[in-house]
Length: 157
Image (cartoon, rainbow, N blue to C red; front, side, top):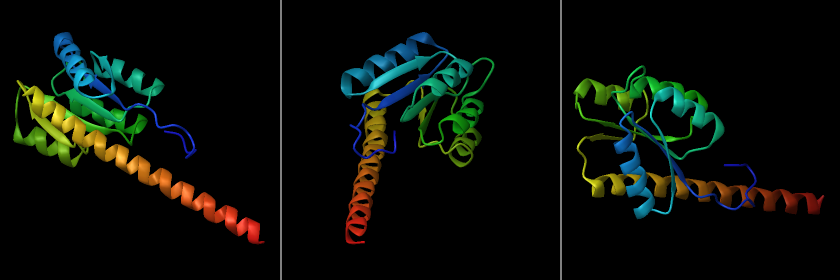
């Protein structure tokens, strides 16, 4: 997102990171069919970090268990590149310790267990993206108000 409040609002984008290609593709197909968003898929943490350096994303959905880099390790690295992106962790191996670390250390908004209900995924993603869009619109309205006040003050002096 740029700082110029007059820029058109860009289409929201989700990054899905899962070493299982069919899971990533299924999530992309599901989310693009149900929501008016763009979804990009990466099959590893390092590939996803490269994508984040090139593209802004509103939400990162990552698997926990991946070769070479866990989902939490990926989210820690992603935080440095895309600190404003919301985060969701999915796993086939539910563990309270992982869930607590995900929420407390990496700011994960949702923790979903595989196999997950597609309706629950869509509902969670929609909720997160709707809140982000509302925040973005409030920030733009505030910036416009500040600009109008500055303009008025400049006109008076």
